[in-house]
Length: 76
Image (cartoon, rainbow, N blue to C red):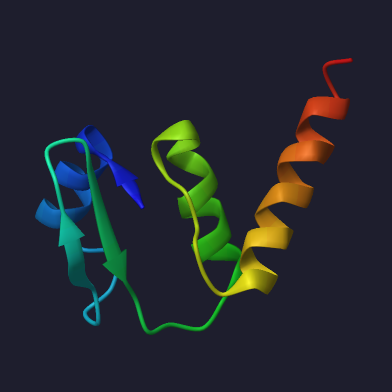
């Protein structure tokens, strides 16, 4: 799920050729991608900060959450 600003970017510069819009509202857009989970994909997701939320696959959700927890630890 992408916030409005990140959605505009992702729609103008698709993340992958398989990208498709699932739902779109004024405040958010849900897109789907059929890709392998790679370090590059995770870095792209993390670069969007709080403007993006991974919904599935769950293993990617958990991986992103773990990366964010590790990042926070650096600042405590």
